[in-house]
Image 1 (cartoon, rainbow, N blue to C red):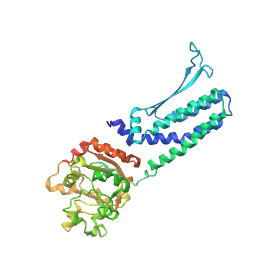
Image 2 (cartoon, rainbow, N blue to C red):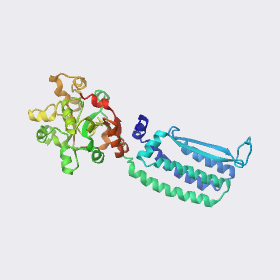
Image 3 (cartoon, rainbow, N blue to C red):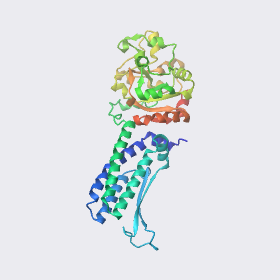
Image 4 (cartoon, one colour):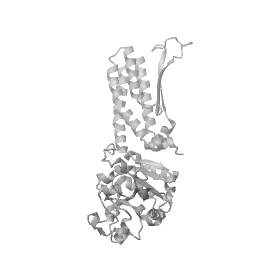
Length: 380
């Protein structure tokens, strides 16, 4: 069962962030070990506990609960008034939140759990050294840490691209506020999600050129018109562009749903609207294919001042009249492809689709997964 806390943990990359922190701080543990051998008994304990405190206190206690306590040694009948190294042992408690552990077990092979156990094991070994100082114990722990740092950094590099988050040029806030869904939307078959996460959203012609496996849900009856060169798109055909909608609640989407095989076979990508200014995008006041068929521009433009003048009332209206409905089909066109960095969210219809997409790790690209039947139900 995927609960809201589990999904939030997945989308927020809680596991990756926590593992990254613990890997980085293995170096801190390594430095502490190089210093502890030159300290007095009391200073050794202080340095040891301070190191672990610095590593785990900065973590959210809701993710990993950290506590160090002293336990009276078994040969004491009554508990001493003052607990110290000679009458008690240090005990470390590291408890992972159940929701975090669920995500770790299901999607990260229990890597966080293994790393936490590793810290626990190091604690025990160092504590043994404090009782009976032996440099060989420290040398063994240092060697294990060095191996673990190399191993985990290789793993981390393979699953988390740190370069996907970048500063993006902004559309005016008043324009973004007018968008009915706060973004542009792109509808696709759920079968295409894996290739989109790998290649980005490709235009109709780019898919053919790269021979990408693709389930086509477009309206084939009008595809020929999108194949014609268009003087308002630098003499390129509309099929050279990725087409998104400002409001997905329009008749075109019905073709997508039918061609995909139902709402449960369709997903919506929510695209950061700043792509319009950063990628020199175009937009139209209606369906681009119809514009070509009728030999008019349908307001195709890349002038942002014209974009501000779109009929936002109709674009946001719940049920526009038929004679106004064409304006609901307004499109945003981006040449060739939409890079993954512009995809903010993938919206799915049911839990089965959510579970099917989570193993593709869109969260590693900064893309959230959202379960929202109501989003689909708005498309009546």
